[in-house]
Structures are given as structure tokens and as C-alpha cells.
Length: 159
Image (cartoon, rainbow, N blue to C red; front, side):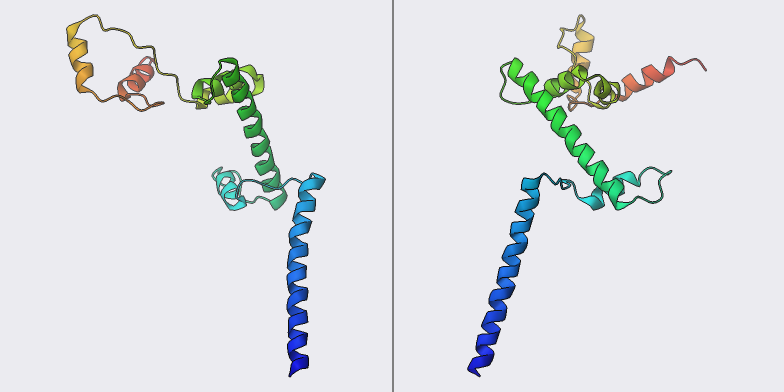
């Protein structure tokens, strides 16, 4: 019986050693510069498949999409950080992200349209009627527009 116990203990030690060795290999990969995705691959695949023209996606393509999104976000946050530091701020706000996107020409071509519009500067209403109307309305959350603004912009199109 003692021989079997010793064998079991040896096997367990070997298994634990192999498990530890596996963890060290992951650390070596990080030191060697091998990139791993920071976004869940399943989620990336779902987002890619939202496009009706794409029916199948390879795992290599998903990896490249995930890594490129990670690099893009790192670049955008670095630019936003620089903009915040220029204005002597410790918190990055939407204005800083917008300034960073505007500074990088390829990014500004598509990203500025997607970012919420900055709130208009507060101005004093000229008449009392508009003042009473605005007091009844709730303030909009950042980035939201009233339906009236949308209808005005589409009604200007000739029929």
C-alpha cells in the first residue's frame, strides 16, 4: 500500500509541476511580444456577423480585427490623454476624445460623426413663452436629440 501512496504523491507532484510550467509559458509569451486579444472572440464574431454580407469569418480574421480594435483604442485614449494634459485636466472627457479624433485625420473622417454632439452653450431665451416651455421639458441626456430637431432636418429635403 505504501508504494501506491508514494506513486500517487509523485504523480500529483508531477501534475502540479506541469500546471505551474504552463503558467510560466504564458508569462514567456507576454515577454516575447506575442499579442493576445483583449476582447472576447465570441463577441467580436457577433459584431462582425451583424453585416449581412459576411457569412463566415475565420479565427485569424477575428484575431486581427480584435487586435486592430485594441490598437485603435489605445491610440485614441493616448491622444485623449495628451489633450487632457494640455488642458491641465486629470479626467478625460468627451471633448478630449473629440480633439484627439480631430487631430488624427483618418480617424476624424468616420469617428466624429459617431461621437455625440457637444451640448450647445447655454443662452438666455429672449421671450417668456419659450422660457415657460423649456421649464416644463426635462433636460436631455448627453448625445440625445429631440425629435423636432430630426424632423426639421428631414423636412428641409425637397419632395
